[in-house]
Length: 277
Ligand SMILES: Cc1cc2nc3c(=O)[nH]c(=O)nc-3n(C[C@H](O)[C@H](O)[C@H](O)COP(=O)(O)OP(=O)(O)OC[C@H]3O[C@@H](n4cnc5c(N)ncnc54)[C@H](O)[C@@H]3O)c2cc1C
Image (cartoon, rainbow, N blue to C red):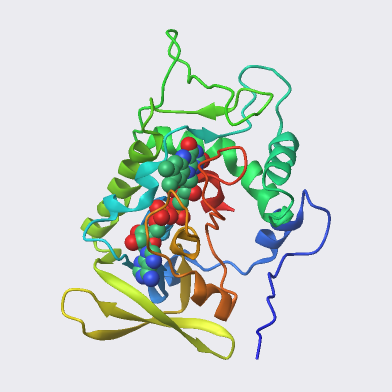
């Protein structure tokens, strides 16, 4: 029997769908965060950032990846840059324009509420990455440089030579490893997620295979974040690494941090920012 895909997009005007929903969420008291555990599947840019942020907030995080090191995630391959509606050039860019370009560039298949959120947080992400030490290209005066990329009519792509993804991944990875060091994040590499444990419609754990021993393990948590990257091997031709857990997403309609679609390396449509949407 086919599952009904419920994307759980919040209601209301596009500009306030996620802002209002976030405000309506119940907060967890800082003292109680320790009592909650979160599983993060995948430690690419999406997963490593999520694990680092959740760990820093005080949650008990378990992060999983198939590689021997998170630095091998395919995020390392991204070259062109990362889009942000900072409008440094005063060339007419705005949150709405980045949203519009991304929806259009994505052939109108993206979830618009999530794309809007992506555009909204885009400027903050650059600041966060800079704070993590990512060496973005700069003008001679010291301000961050950006360029027009992927057919965009404005300059909004921030870059680190031709290795933006690698530099961003090193930043996210270092932050995650800092949380591993202080004991907030437990990293389990060489684990492949096979299934999600769903109790009363909520993801409460995962089943993984230990790729070194072949052993099947189960892990429980209060919440599960799937950040396992793009479609990859669903497609015959893809520039992405050949590993993905996309079929599980369809089974459970899980909330993803990134949905890389067919992966054609085009910052104007999906790109690095999507991990935050
Ligand atoms: C060649 C190339 C160039 C690109 N250029 C750009 C660009 O210039 N600008 C831009 O914005 N975007 C670009 N992109 C897209 C961008 O890199 C991706 O959208 C982004 O890095 C995806 O990050 P992610 O963390 O979601 O996935 P990934 O980095 O792929 O990480 C996936 C993680 O999930 C883990 N995983 C997968 N399956 C399982 C499983 N079953 N069990 C456990 N763990 C699992 C992996 O081990 C990995 O840790 C490019 C992509 C490629 C391939």
